[in-house]
Image 1 (cartoon, rainbow, N blue to C red):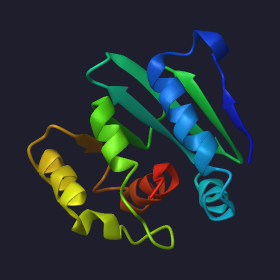
Image 2: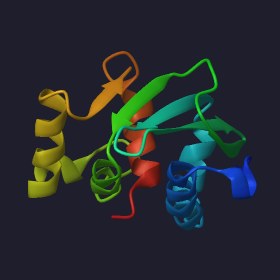
Image 3: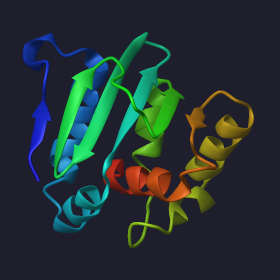
Image 4: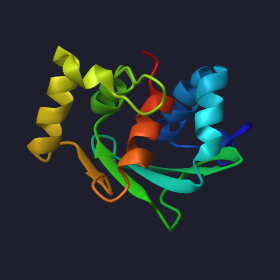
Length: 138
């Protein structure tokens, strides 16, 4: 699976962060296989940096500035929350065991308080868990 940072040097900081996480993770054959199963776009809104990114999964992975419709999930999070989610361990691509840790409970509390928002979580839970598995470095 190829990963493309569409905006290159003009990419915003959120895109660079996601590119860094995903470039490292997609060297793993299991994560690459999981990413190839996803045929959707996911929007990330970095609320602390006021930057947006879209991840387009379709045989390859494209990261681009701003939102590109249609989006299956929209995640509104701070940079720290994104990094916390990247520490959640997911087994087999669908079992997020990392939510049963101190960090994981903290993420769940942020979701329940509305400080970390995942629009589409209830309608597309498998996509959400696969996304967490792909960005997870744990």
